[in-house]
Image (cartoon, rainbow, N blue to C red; front, side, top):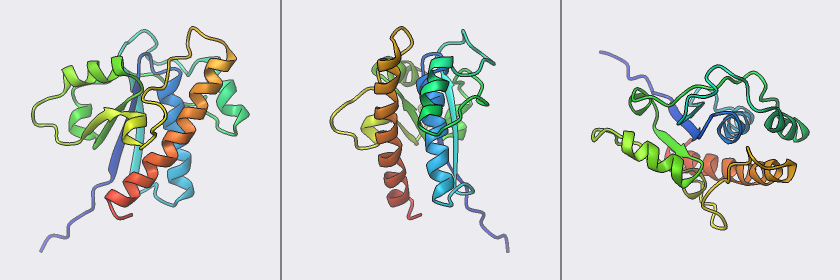
Length: 165
């Protein structure tokens, strides 16, 4: 008799270039998953809808903002979301409506996971999107960080509830 192996829950955060918002969400969510002792049950990644920064580390301003809050995101590298991600990830979460629209166009009919906006799926009611801070200043990165911090807390709570972790 074969023993069933529980498959980890896989979460993918997606923004435009995978150098600001999605790697920040990736690192923060991973930290929360680790703190809860769920690293074997929840796997995390991030990607971008555009390929301009493939293989690059996160934007220096995103790194500085994250580090100021105690999160080191410098080891992450940008990649582009692919069709294979829809076979791999249970949650694919866009940071804004444009990212979500791009993902929705890529979505195969057989995908039965959660495809949505990160903050909406995390239960954040005061904001729907994490605005792209790339062309802004430090305040824009701080605002994105605050929204992401709020979102990862809500998302982990939802996943723990939905999957009885």
